[in-house]
Length: 363
Image (cartoon, rainbow, N blue to C red; front, side, top):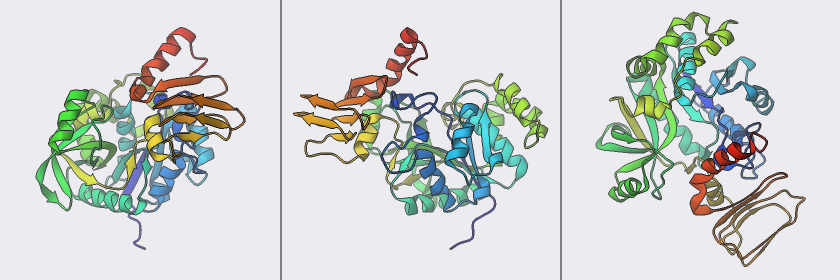
């Protein structure tokens, strides 16, 4: 086995609340800490395990909201305590990336790193390892912001789309022409038809120098907050300083803040059986189905004349479904969700409605 490169790092982003997986995913226990596909391991555990194959364990960090730090420690007992990086508030992915990039760069100015969500499903771990190492080696030598791209299978409005040059600049590495975050349906259909767009998998790779340079150029106010306090990073003062910084940070994603604007963005078209497991329909696609196309989780679910449904219910509850087609049915102890599969992107909006009318009780 090839020795692991000590200048390679990974930051697993695990602070989201997974609201499109409501009501199974809740604020106090979101989807990254759940075994969504009944595999015996949570999404976070699978993600961590994948990275241990080619990143030294001491170089694996998990960035999460402070309320989940204990859950991360419990689910990943081998992760060093100091590698659980707590955010004081949710400010989207740009502050998260700025924080961990400054932190790692201070420790190791030669670092190259992967920033990856905790809740993705990867079917082919060997192909994933090979693609990530290729990306890290390219990032190590170049001032480049890399993303991994997936061939789209449908006009999905939940993903960013990447258009790339046809000429490769290195082994399977292409310069990005345009980077469009979550287009409307008509635009997504056009992208799919053209055949020269990839989904943005949300897995980014760069050396810390390149990403910090990009922050300095495209999000200078945010970058300055971290630069002014960088002496406190990796010291006992870090927690207080980060609370102060986050209170002043803009709420913006790395996609909007940097990737759409930068001119040194590259993509590696990847094929490792990827799903971001962002919605109940994506879980449905990856679960075993019965002869009528229903994906059922729950020992006491009875299905009569129902087809292509995604059903999840507690094992000790009898749930009988009749005459439903292409529906999402999720039953928990205090919430029952019945929703058309085609409207699953709206679940986030439905959750906001629940919060508006019922408060935080069902969140």
